[in-house]
Amino acid sequence: MEGTPAEKPRGSALHRFANPGRFMRLSGALLPWVASAGLALSVVGLGWGLVFAPRDWQQGDTVRIMFVHVPAAWIAMGGYLGLAVASFIGLVWRHPLADIAARAIAPVGAVFTAICLVTGSLWGKPMWGTWWVWDARLTSVLVLFFLYLGHIALSNAFDDPDRAARPAAILALIGAVNLPIIKFSVEWWNTLHQPASVTRLDAPGIHIDILLPLVITAAGFLFVFAALALLRTRTGILERRARALMAARAAEAAAPPAPVPV
Amino acid sequence: MDASFWAMGGHAAFVWPSYAIGVGLLVALAAASWRGYVAAREAVARLEAEGLRRRRGGSQ
Image 1 (tube, rainbow over the protein chains, first blue to last red):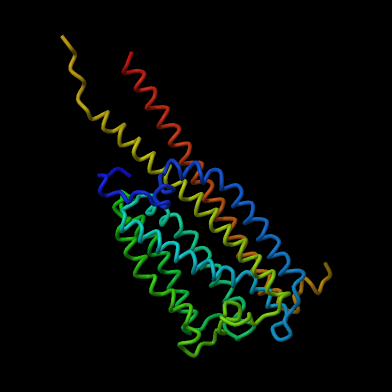
Image 2: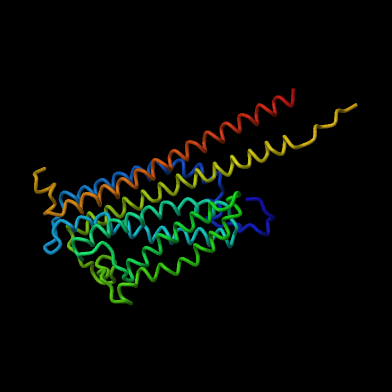
């Protein structure tokens, strides 16, 4: 946070909001609303998908797995983009808040990726006849999961988290190459996984009765992701403050007693 | 809810676990994140109180 004036990018809104004190105040006010929106939209979207959405004429009720699987996949990829952006800001501007945010995002993204993989497997068995196949889409999402785990492991590999930030950020940025591979894997290779049916340049390829709960759940998961990332970033700021206080206490204890004035 | 809803057209073994695992993992992550936040908040409060006591003790 400290630095010479020449090191500080001045005047940008990003930097203004990246002040830890201001971030704590702003995120403290936002967090209940973001968490509530995430909870409400997720409950409505998932409930709608589970109970009221029509069954697919080919896939039957297994299509309901889509309401968990697809939003989780979107958030898994979007979360990694957030991780890469935070890592880039941390590397370039050396802002500790960006490093803390990257550390906060990684476990949340890993959980959404795990949900995507497990529900994909549960959907694959009745539809494809197999739990898993090493096709390009499934393999690249598994790589995404390992990238998240690698980031978590690297971030915790050093006693001082600040020292871990740089190698973890480099890993996150290198791993970002995987994002277009995931996105276009179903076009570049002949995969068992179907091509995109919602995020297409022309009209979505699914009916509005299925699309609506899907979009609502995706919005809910996005808010849940944001709430968890905000909460964990706040935790990271507090842990950093605790480390600073402990270092100050240790320095006080090690300091020689002040000379008694005569 | 009738029995056909719970049966999910014969795919209950795939549909229900998908929702249970999805919701369960998110709830577990939220609980762990909240516990971590509370622990960090208490640690800072304790350390700040200790520092305040030390400074007051030193100034007396």
